[in-house]
Image (cartoon, rainbow, N blue to C red; front, side, top):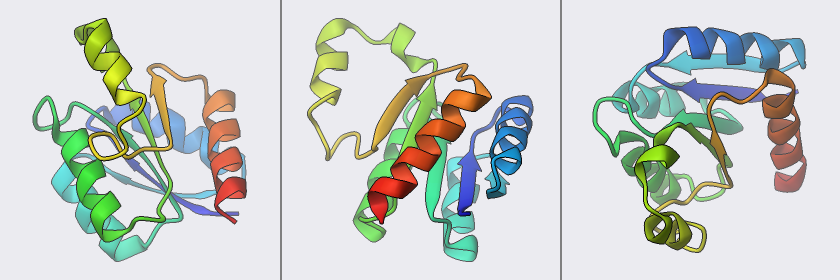
Length: 129
């Protein structure tokens, strides 16, 4: 299967998602901040990233996704966050069509059941082939 990198400051959520993905046959690494996440991408060269929005700052995940998109444009990313509750409809609608501001392949609201996350990871990996 694939090497997946989880980037999230919620240690419990990372552990839960890691277990679900490992049970699905994937190798999983974890990072707990955007800075640590970028370093982990360079170290592990994952085939897919699952990242949070709010870590060190409100926009840390968006900024990391933008940087990763510039440096690794073919790397699939799934963004998991509860940030949607803080956004108004106009901001949310603009994200759906803005690959520069939010260059991720899937945006999913936390918490995501393990089976759903595994399905999305497998589906994106299949699309990337």
